Image (spheres, rainbow, N blue to C red):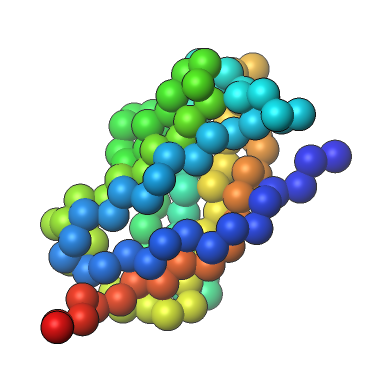
Amino acid sequence: MQYPATVNLPRILKGKTWDPEPITYKLDGAAVNLTGCQATLKIKQGTTTLVSMTSTPAAGITLGGTAGTIALLLTATATAALTTCADAVYELELLLADSATVRSLMVGRVSIVEEVAV
């Protein structure tokens, strides 16, 4: 049985583009071919969904096929509309190409913060 990795994502700055380093999904050290797969990511505070991203239709997630990469992107306009939250949690799920298997890849925390003036 495969369990999701627990990884905290980089904070989201309101009003700034959020595009953390792509995630590479590997099994036994080899990149998993994500061709034909679909991904979803939800950021929640309690039972309230703050962000919902998908790869199909393309809405913030881009899958890298044979490279096994998962790239996340929220535009500056999208982050500006978010509610500040220090204790949000997320889950990244993958629907495999067989369309029958949903795998929870990653879970963890992410904060949504106002940009700090310097």
